[in-house]
Amino acid sequence: MFEKHGILFRSDLLDASGIRHGFSTREGGVSHLPHTASMNVADGHGDTPETVRENIGILARAVTDGILDETAVICAPQIHSAAVRYVTEADCGHPAEPCDGFFTDCPGVLLMVRTADCVPILYTARRADGSPLIAAVHAGWRGTVAGIAAEAVRKLTQAGADISTVRAAIGQCIHDCCFEVREDFTHAVTELCGADFASRHIRAQNGKQYADLIGMNTEILQGAGLAQAQIDVSPYCTACQPDLFHSHRASHGKRGAMGAVIGIL
Image: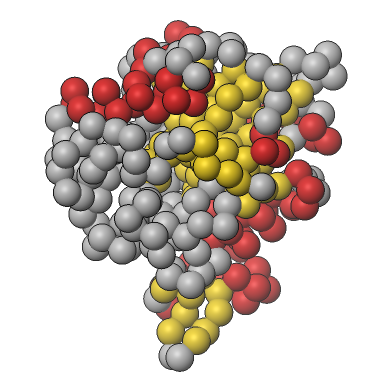
């Protein structure tokens, strides 16, 4: 279940000793431009680098109750891929290599992916000795059909996590009520994932087609070995509530970006 805690949404499925996480909204930041106000955590949308850095610091402190700040955050240029990289404290404070996901077992590191309709997924897991692992991915539609959600599970289990301990929380993103797609999208999903997969997650209505990114990622996670009880899904559509969430579709591209953050304290 997702609940709002101040400026963040959190999933109770990820609540675990020593791990903190949060999915940001548009609230609580220092951005003053109408389209980025007030919590924008990405450069390239009109805010100064100083403003973006201050917002990231506010978000980091909100996630960790003031224990960590922007110097602990790791993010990267996102390229709509299935690349999930291992990172450590040595990667903090400067951009990582382009990718769309991270995983780590290092305390004091905050993994952050940025979205504004795409799907953010945060993960927790444990090794047999009880030591924690975490991951965060940005799943745009290309990353979704490339299987980035499953790739994160694979990275965690390769690092020693027991699959039964993996938990995944799918944060706020665009839902199928608003994600209208064209024929080229349907052809691409069919080619990469098969016609049956496409038919389950792309529906026709009033001469238009709508895609369900949540359904796609949920099925991909289940295919990677997670039971439904190991997956939590935010009920909020970013395009339906552009006053609360940044939405690329609702704003026609003039917007900021939200952050999904997780760390081991």
